[in-house]
Image (cartoon, rainbow, N blue to C red; front, side):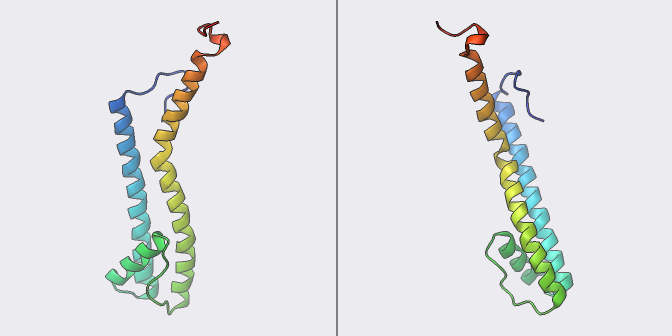
Length: 124
């Protein structure tokens, strides 16, 4: 997926395209997780679609539920969904920042390689 350490850096245009692709993946992941929450709250707790959306969005955003839960299934779902949401947040941040971190490390590695004594290009 990313270039190997011996390959040159991507051009700025290709890097921007990679950033956009990763941002779309992160947004898709978040909307997919939001959809899971909406369906779960609607089906297990019997909430209307808007209430299910609000509760799912608040849990996914780390704020907590808005509506009091009444069923055992809804409470179990909310617990699992809260843990799932934390993982989705971490994965989403990782996907979003991976291209920038990789480019930084790739460039850092290239700079270190060009000034190392083994490369034969260092000023002596």
